[in-house]
Length: 93
Image (cartoon, rainbow, N blue to C red; front, side):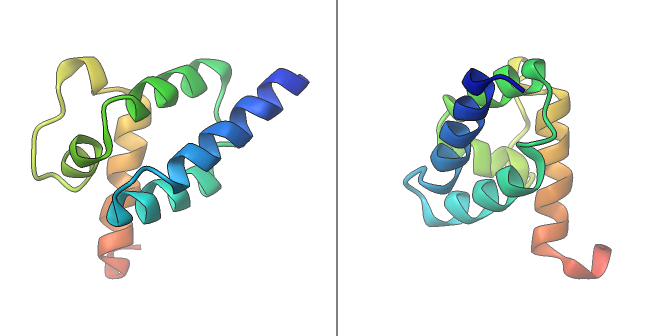
């Protein structure tokens, strides 16, 4: 892993923890802690783009309150949705 990639991962982890909405901070922070080190460069790009969508939208999509728009319906979003399901219902783990 290059230094640039390591810095990018740290930056994305920080952004995930401090989005501005407490529910999203918790969900994305935990998600990033679990997945960010495993993400490929492509997945990091997808995740960074997702974060730009804004935390109210991301939260609504992840917990199934709203349909995910096509441009954000990615493998990373699917991982986040699966993660959110388990975060909200530990019995499903």
